[in-house]
Image: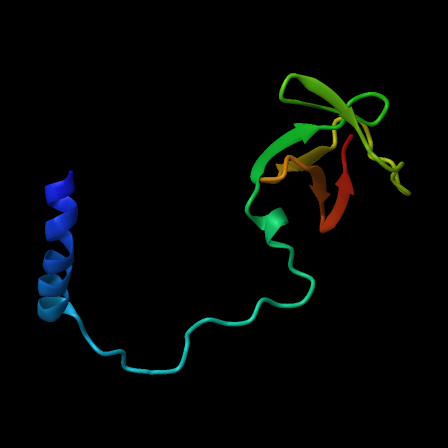
Length: 102
């Protein structure tokens, strides 16, 4: 392992001399994140579940309900998307609306 770590910088230089290319455009290709976009909600585990009796959802062997009562309750058996964020926050997504689970 030590030998590989010692040789690696020279191999990288050799590789870059052979294959490196200058970019056609020098300005950054990165774009600013649009306002209102929460990456925690995008980079999440997504699964579909049905709303059960009492506005409940079964997920991961547990039964959850909404943290705040929805203004328009879901009909039983409505299919919704459950998102589990990297911070273990559970959210229900349905037609662009988000509700937190507890």
